[in-house]
Image (tube, rainbow, N blue to C red; front, side, top):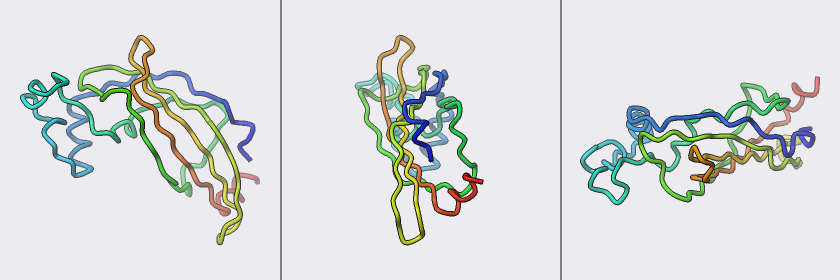
Length: 149
């Protein structure tokens, strides 16, 4: 179903690691470690600044992968992993983009399921990789039926 999308990539989008957004995100996930929001703690840390929680990149804009038309409802978040070269530092700007890596189907208890693997990246403004993440999007039989109409 999405095999023709493998290898497609979005254009890079600039995102800011904004102090207020990092604090709100940390509060929302219930991780109130002061390294995320307390300026004095950040200044006294090895990073000399506050950093973002590891899952903060979920809040970034990764741009649009042209031709990848997923529905806005009915998808299942099948999992996500993150790999960091270094932490995200509050106040920096980064470039983010995504690429379709793989698509496969499996028969399950609820019918034919599709599995779309998307890898996302965050780089500094000169192109050095900061993080990557891999997401699995599960496309249920019900959603697949809607998509093939």
